Image (cartoon, rainbow, N blue to C red; front, side):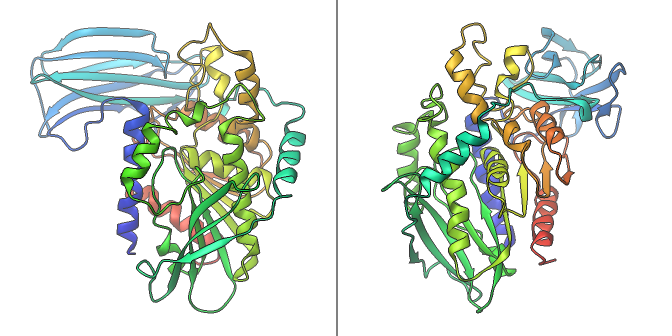
Length: 433
């Protein structure tokens, strides 16, 4: 598979995820654009400074006269100003905002043009290097996960692999594989790509964003000289028709991220996290692995799983976390933006305390605290699924070597330049660049 084809597949999946999770208007390509720009080129300010925003509602690059807008402004997810039905005579508006505490300040504008709505936003960071998480670190966090993994590893992998000749290339053999997860009969499925040339290779585990879908495998990276394994998390084969996964997502797996979240021993993500780590067990069992270089990477839910693997398994030598979800779940209990899936945001006054306690064992922040290998972070300031407040809080808590590469204008997706930078860093860590 060519690199551009892989990129298009990944971007399409990430975009669809953004639409389904955020439930917010996505303009796509349109002649109507709500452009909002800050007066600092890096979108960053110190607390107490004033951020200036310029709004332009455009059609084909020129401003629209007498356009009606609604807008809201304030800390992300908690706007303090809301105005509806404002008419911009010349299609432009200026706005100023500030924050006294470290955080992210967002201006969101909805324009009404020809009976349709068009949304634009701009999010300024105020002393983002000082943003700290709110979640509590359970005293028995390490004991819980060590015991969980030890119990799971009592079940042998019993790995299986099936060649997919239609996906193989001259340089790479492609297989659908499976191996046991947390208990007998509970299996993890994925697509394994192995260079055809005999030798020992570095390895890369790709962990998925939220949703239910088939997988193609990372053939391009494998052709550069690496073993790659792309996994699903739901314990079903990953080569079925898309319609089968749609049926599961709308049926038995609808809202899976909330299953048993008031019970740390039986919540859905326990099996998911264990399966990600057991994927490392599987890679380590391969004769082709070089035994020294093993990375993990993903975006959104996959960004979280990258933190999990890097924290729980010292065989991981690097990780890339892009707009990592599931971080700082309890922030919303203090009126601060919380990570997807926003467990306590919508009803903070009627909270199940068992769910609060359980969330701490499944919070990316508490995994990030424990990471010791190098990491690469990237996210967008305008992300309305994974708030940049949580992304900064998670990044700031990491004490191991790390790099931060924000792409401010992006929402819950990535752009070509971001992908290229991400992939180049991964290849460099594997000694392939």
